[in-house]
Length: 597
Image (cartoon, rainbow, N blue to C red):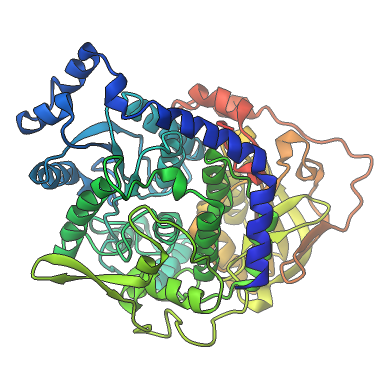
């Protein structure tokens, strides 16, 4: 096995000895109580069963079979979550036929970054992840469940579900995905039209027509952003059925997989020989497998926050250095947008996660001595097929499209998609896989902004027609909830297209759609908490060198006093004042930007 992968895994386990033991002590204490329903009073159980479907009531009350708790992030505003409307009834029907039952234990918030992009709601987006985790804990706190199925996909929702479920890690737990929407217009065309609109070359009607052609149906967005990165990572970690992440909604295989996961989760219950609590799956080795798959696929920068926070929920401490070291030895084996033209459906058609995992296994980059939620590592190297209406699993084949997914020798790039940058301005992360080599190094004067919207204004006023490192500060988690700054991408894309050397430096986020603009993200410490970004002024010379892994200010900052605007003043409307305690308590980006740990 690759030496670096072994070393990173070993040091995660070593630094996590105390925190992992505390977590396991808590899990063992919960486990010792026995079956959760045993400790409930008759009144407790009567309340829980009162509204249950008649066919399931006897099982809920007397407990002859398992009772599965469903945590759903369904709403019909998120295209990815619309299919979940039907899932609880489908799951209940399957379990009922086997002598078990299921109840919707709770619903979680499920906001869409695509809807809130550039809007005040985006300032609450990252905090919604921890709120989702708390919602899971509330739902499962009723203690009438023997296993858990998690229904959630998108940006902050799926990581939040893992974090919340980890608190009930004594229960067998699995994810039930729903799949991506069909391919609309190409992502390349989408980007081009956005840039033309930003340049004033197209009107809003043309922009709206394009956007609706791109986001046009139920399922996840087809580009490889955070939602689809979630699904790939969770499958690689063994938290769902093999090959199920990217099967489209409403095809026969999708429905059959939902039925299969319901059948399989009860096999992992306390009453059988295959008891598989979630804590057996949330291990350092499975997290490393997830990170390796993420890096080899050029996934979302948001996972430099999410993987750290999910691991913390299970008592494991992962650092950016772990990510950086893995990235040095993990090659890029997937070539989809924003790294290339193809989308997530092309990845699935090429073989999907099982083919990728098989390729990583053959290269000695993933651990095989792991347990998964519903099986073992060997099962992760299989693909589901329908045989007379039943799901069967076959050995993963070679890639069907080597231009999208490499399963043999070679790679698209020798290193993974994420890189950590260090320097006198702090530590940050960059998604390097989508940035052309000629843009890896930018040495240019800073243009400093305290608000992302001021960048757009400066561009429209013609004030950014120059080589520049655009600095957007006070966008960190403590200042404004760490919003995504995608509204800036068409602007910076046009400047780059015009021949200027530009880069972005920010304590905010960009996520999986980080593209061709070199972007140093999640700068830590953030400006509001003493980070050097607060000292920068227009004209300071910034040396942004992604190849060297450095970003520095070449102008002396000595003797300067930081600028600290009243960030809370701008965080009052649209409910943002309710999240003041989150901004006060949130950890740094380098610690996962969470207020829970």
